[in-house]
Amino acid sequence: MPFDKPQRTTRRRSSAGPVPPRRPAVSHHDRGHLTRQGPRPTFLALKDHGKVYVADMPYLSDGQLTHISKEAEEVLASLERRISELESNHSIAQAERDTLIKACTKRDVTHRFLRAIRDEQEHRRNNPAVRSAANESLPRTFLEIARHRLPGATFDSLLQEALTACEQHREEPESTPANQKPTPVKVVSLTNPASSLPVVVSPDPEPGEAASG
Image 1 (cartoon, rainbow, N blue to C red):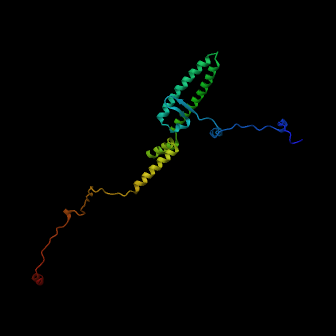
Image 2 (tube, one colour):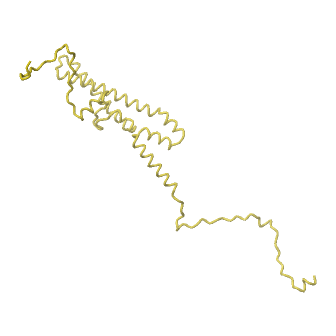
Image 3 (tube, rainbow, N blue to C red):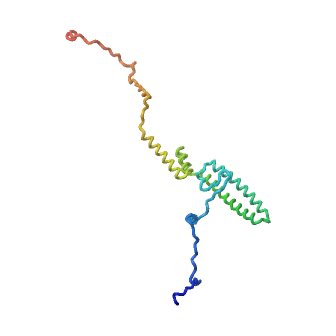
């Protein structure tokens, strides 16, 4: 076959084996999302608090958990009514069917959200570290609650700041202010004047009297 003639483009035969899949071009930003596997973080969009994630519940106060739980219960009740209305409609359109699916999905998420709130509240009531610290002292109890409630970096930073302040206080010399008068020292007599014997002091004798004596 002469080489000056144009060569035909050959096609891959099916007997040569499977063709490897062509992966689409992925940017650096999208590659980070593709490498993450697992379920999406559970959150609930509320009227007063916005998006509240289950992972952030340990950092909320008891009052915030109670308010969020009440608001989530209202969302659940509204979803139940909406789902009941859609299911009662026998001639449901495609758009309403999609709405029903979304409402059911959000209802399941709300159930998981409320269950996470109850678990967090139960854990706070029965935390063994807090119960043990409560039997010891108030500062130890406060320390354990702060350890559970604050993020790790925030807790470590505040604890280091407190330790530094205590060390500086110990190294400072104790000085008395200039305008402060020294405390008078009380002197207590060890003898009883009523029981002591009288002491008589006589004048010195004359030289002549001392010689004759």
